[in-house]
Image (tube, rainbow, N blue to C red):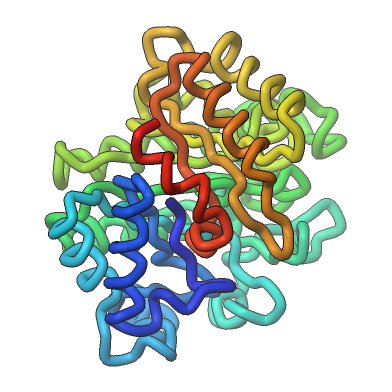
Length: 337
């Protein structure tokens, strides 16, 4: 289950966290992916972000450590906890996180027009910049080191990721010219340009895996990218390469679809084309439980789970926690499934 600080108040009181953990356990949930990085803030006290941007923790959580609280509560109930680094390389959305590029303007990802790139309302950091990558690694290493009983970390469709429209920073173009002798043309149809940038993010995925495993070999590295090839054509996420090279321990592609035929079609691509059969055990697809006013019918929800089991997939990750109460009937039987 993904547990967020958006459209949910569960993380804002210790009692809310305890209630969320209890609800998850009753509903058959044994992994909680709890948001720990969004809106330019952490949801645990961070020296890295405080030293870099002057904000130790999301302001409403000052004086608390929600990650410590949820690890303690969840482990007491045999539930694993992963720190979900939701925003990844995304910097700002609707004004939240604006301090990142205000204080670090050179970190901005530029589009073809030379301006800060915006996609789906988000401004982005330049994920190809070594300084930006080092900042993200310092954040990941901090959370892994500070919480030695944390079960894992999770990247998603923004980590490691960069909109395909990005990459036109002068230093990136110079490096591309040096390595390939080419000048990029169209951000999406220039295949060499797409592959080169995706390859740089592949190396960062490798770096995340290898450097965090040095700190704690037992730590699980989870990723929840968009479906493929959309992930690569829109966000330079070549995640089948991560799987093939063993740079991910748990993979949850966001198979967010609104009818069973569409869900079945995407799942089929994952299990037959994108993930080798000997690695299917790491797959737990992302299943949409609630977004805005939408929720799947119980029949559709059951059909998606049945499709997973028919493909020998043993589990799934639901987005998101607040949908539990709206699907109470389904989750009465889910623990037996």
